[in-house]
Amino acid sequence: MRKKGILERLKHGPVLGDGGYLLELEKRGWVRAGPFTPEVALIYPEALRELHVEFREAGAEVLQALTFYASRDKLATVGLENRLEDLNRAAVRIAREVAGDRCLVAGNLSLTWMYEPNSPAAADRVRQTFDEQLEVQVEEGVDFIIGETFSWLGEALIAVERAKTTGLPAMVTICFENKDETAEGKSAAYAAKALFDAGADIVGMNCLRPPQHILGPMEDMRKAVSGYLACQPVAYRTPNDKPDFTSLPEFPYALDPLQLTRKEMADYAVQARDIGINFIGACCGTVAMHIREMARALDKLPEDSRIWKKGGEKPMSAYEYYDHENAKAGGGK
Image 1 (cartoon, rainbow, N blue to C red):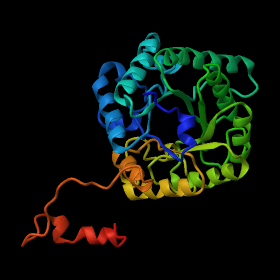
Image 2 (image 1 turned 60 degrees about the horizontal axis):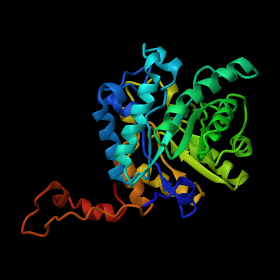
Image 3 (image 1 turned 120 degrees about the vertical axis):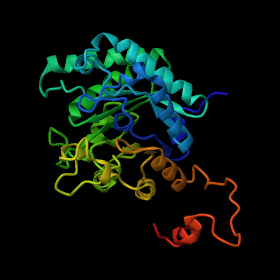
Image 4 (image 1 turned 180 degrees about the horizontal axis):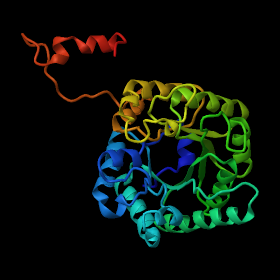
């Protein structure tokens, strides 16, 4: 039976994405903080496969191949520039194996750190970088392309251009650092219009900011355009003066106390749906527990129905002893 594509699914309501990979795999010991390159797909594919499984079982409808930072220049920083094809191929294959008939698989392009405004030579390098990854990812059978984490709108527009050459649907998202604008100084509304005009099928924002600091610009996008919008915030709490979590002194080794709760991410999913976001996902710091609660909040996953025989003479757990179930039903945390 043919899987419905991303655009077909979006016609019928919000689609739930997955969570963050590189930071979670770093916590588990398989990615080095600093370069955050995804060689885990080659050195320990089982770790990557397990994280995909966790997101799938939590209710994600899309799995992103871990090809973020899998470009030649980034891989060169860790001596793996000659493994680009192997890494991109392995990452897509792992995602496809886990996705099966249940999830779509998105190829992934990310910021290159080589883009320069008003530089045709830099733009051509970015094009070559994207094309090199796309060739392998498309060969391996991705369902659509996600280009993400572009502070420069100009680089995001190149991602749209190259993704469209594949003939697959293209979702391209920008990110705001500590100002509510792109690196060129463009607003969220302006960027959304420009990306759609360039041919993107889905546009939006991802990474760097938590829901608190990303939903406002997303509302501006929704007011400005009528097409499909995507939102993938981080699950870390950040202050008003530094909404970009990578600018905090806690990045990357002391982020744990800043992680949002599963309820906060579930609340985000509902807010996103209510303002008209179509692709509701998440990014760094978001793990399976968050995606599971987001799925439940969006009515994509039922409450836990496993057998639990309660109501005996005495409580058999602290959950019963302190009446946490009723506290939860009454709105407590």
